[in-house]
Structure formats: structure tokens, C-alpha cells
Length: 300
Image (tube, rainbow, N blue to C red; front, side):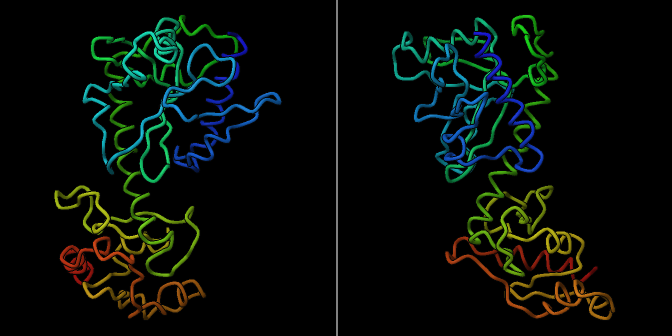
């Protein structure tokens, strides 16, 4: 069990180190390939939703697949994850493992699919309730288990207060929505910037046409644009605009500036260029939303 705990902590450290630049998003193949821990390959996600690496008595992770872009029905407003048993036998080995995780208060990783076999890593989650009549358990996202020291006994860790767990869930929910939106939009544009065609996904954002703070700013692909970070910032600051005919416009004062090659080639020469749009018409930018947003650009 102690070696199992050390491996679990090494996996948590790996997730933490990757989080700043990955956003906590991992491909299914990457998770199934796993990581090396003391010369041993540890698979983070398996073919089954409740995953035990070889020799583990308690699951390392639980996974849910997405049937729609924002299917968050398994996470309630109280911040608790409802996770279904495997099958209908409460005494199945996987389901016993979930109860053992609850008994020992062992933290798990929750991999929530956001889009196309890409998963948001939510961790640590603690199973706090077993509901055999409903063939499920309930788990809480608890930051108290995030920074663990070597040799820790999980049962000695005090669970975070309810308000802390609810705040952790609200942050997680926001991140899930944003990451799902980004994956859908960037995929629709074939991993390219709609303005300059840059083909480096790590440098691409999903920009909202109508901001998500507006009730019309729904997180759907027709309200999104795949933009590199420079053109995203320029769009948000009304340095560039996009009209309903999918043409790029650069603000007049910017066109009159004289500066280095980035200004010339990255902005000025794009004035009047055609937008790169998705192949599928239903995924293309909504022209009415573009008209509203372009009006703001013209007023800037």
C-alpha cells in the first residue's frame, strides 16, 4: 500500500507540473501510454472507467466519456461527482475498489472527456458516499489532498469545508466549459488560426465573437473563432475586426503606424484578407453575431 501511495503521489506531481501549459487537458492515448515511476510504467487510464494499475488495491482514476459538448450531468450544483458503478453488481471488484477508496479516503483522478478523446484531469477527488441502491458513488473535489507530503496517511487529512469544495467545483466547472469550447472550435478550424493560418495548436485560442459575459455569447462553434494569441488579443482590443462577409479589417490608425515586421506582416498586410473558415457550414462563424461584433469594432 505504501508503494501504491508513492506512485499515486508521483502521478499527482506529474499532473501538477503539466497543468500550467496543458491546461489539464490530455489525450486518451497519452493517458493510456502513462508515465515512468521508478522504472515502472504506470498507465493513468485504461479501457474501463474505473482504473487500477497492476498491483493496485484502490483505483488510480475514474473516467467518463462525453456524449455531447457540455454533458456535465454527473456533476451537481453541490460540487459532487456522481459516478456510476461498473455494471449492476455492487460486489464487482471495481465497485469494491471504489468503496475501499472511500474507506481509506484515498484521492483519485477524475478524467472528464471534453471533446474527441481529450480529457480534463480533475484531481484530487475523494469518494464520500456509496449509494448501492442507485448503483453509484459520490465524490468531492477536495484541494486539501492536492499537495501531499511523503509518507502521508490519507485518513489523517481533514476534508476541506463545504464552501471551499464548492468554490473548487465552480472553478472546475468554468475550466471544463472553456476547455470544451476551445477543443470544439480549434478542431473545427483544423488546428489553424482563422486569420494567419498558423498551425501550432499550442499557440491557438478559441475567441468568442460575442463575449461569454453576454447572454448571446453561448459557447458554441458558430460563436467562436480559432485565433493565434496575437490575433486573439488584437480582436479583443478592436485592433482588428471581422465583417459578416468573413473579411478582415485592421483599424485605420494601426494601418498608418510605422514599426517593425510584426506590425507590417502580422497586421497591416492582413487588411482585406479573407477569413479561413471551417469546411462544414454549420460550424462557420454566425454572420449575425459577426455583424454585432463588427459594429463594436467600427465604433472603437
